[in-house]
Amino acid sequence: MGSAVDAVPLSGIVRIREMMFGVERPFRLDQGDMSFAAPQAFKDGIAQALRDDDTHYSLTAGLPRLRELVVAKLRARNQIEARVDQIQIANGGIHGLYLVWQALLEPGDEVILPDPWWPPVQAQVLLARGTPVGCPLREELGWRYDLDELARKITPRTRVIYINSPHNPTGGMLTRADLEAILALAQQHDLTIVSDEAYEDYAYGAPHVSIASLPGAAERTFSVFTFSKSYAVTGLRLGYVVAPRLHDRLQKLAFYTASNVCTAVQRGGIVALEHGRAPLDEFVAEIERRRRLFFGAIADASRGVLAGDCPAGGVFAFLRVARDWHPRARHHAPIGESDSWAFAEYLIKQGRIGCVPGIDFGPHGEGYVRFCVAREPVELEGALASMREIFA
Image (tube, rainbow, N blue to C red; front, side):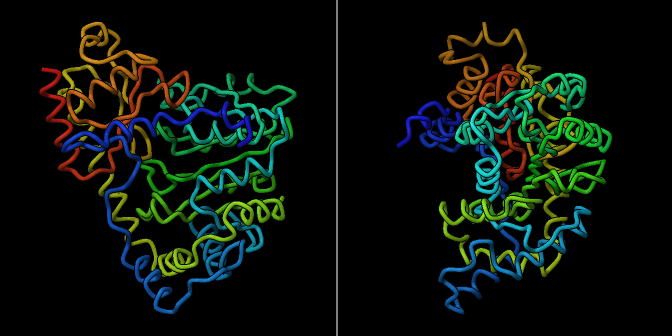
């Protein structure tokens, strides 16, 4: 094992999962997973593939029919014009991002990341020998960039601006004006944009905008999408990259990491795309209801210990922990690395409530915790009831 891997942090989410494993009757709000069953069309496609004995090697770039349907979806849903040969099918969004970073970065190249960030992105940049550079997302701006601050982060070594909108963990959404300003910076400094759009369907109020749809953006933007969140198939691993260049590199990396994506799962994606968006629209409406349930009750349930506005998108609640909480609670839980870790451990041990400490998402996540609100209402209500007891 290369020693460089030793310097890459293992996400605290892994540690949280281990802690939750021993909890009886847990409320699993730590998992960024949807509680829905996969759409029937997706399951039917997989089942038919198995009945057809379609269990052998397939094209490394992905099944042609799937890539054709992805191109049609991008045009209709994202206003992105792409060719079939620009689509690389991947084992979920995380694999797609890994391929992109390995294809793009030379040692020492700087990548500007939103801070808080999704932990695997920072780790993947490090694995590609790049240098992550955090730029704060500001809660007072709806978890968006101060664009002047973003511009000041650019140096002669900057190679990529990474964006994730709707954002994990905060739920912030970049506006069209934000994206236009980021594109202008990328054009001014000849930078590449990597756009992670895992939560593209979970936008409330204002519609989601793909930056590659803006004039002049497609030729410098690698867009990464996943079926995982939209179709509630996080365990099936199906995503795709829209790449303006470096197609041979992406295919090499895909072949040498996975040979090809599971053929049966690709068949499921084909049938799901052929059957339209009705299941997705139902999922989005239900998540919006659950968000309102959770945010409407959290201040009362936590006795004011947790606070935060309902974000513009995503499936998470990224909440501030009251500054005066931890001195009273330190006798309940070990402090560990940070106050947000202490708070997360307190919720797990005293309330059976899973959450992820904000510090795991970067320096500007300290003082916050993340909950997933895509869980069943009974689980959300159970977690809220438990909070009312432990914060009484």
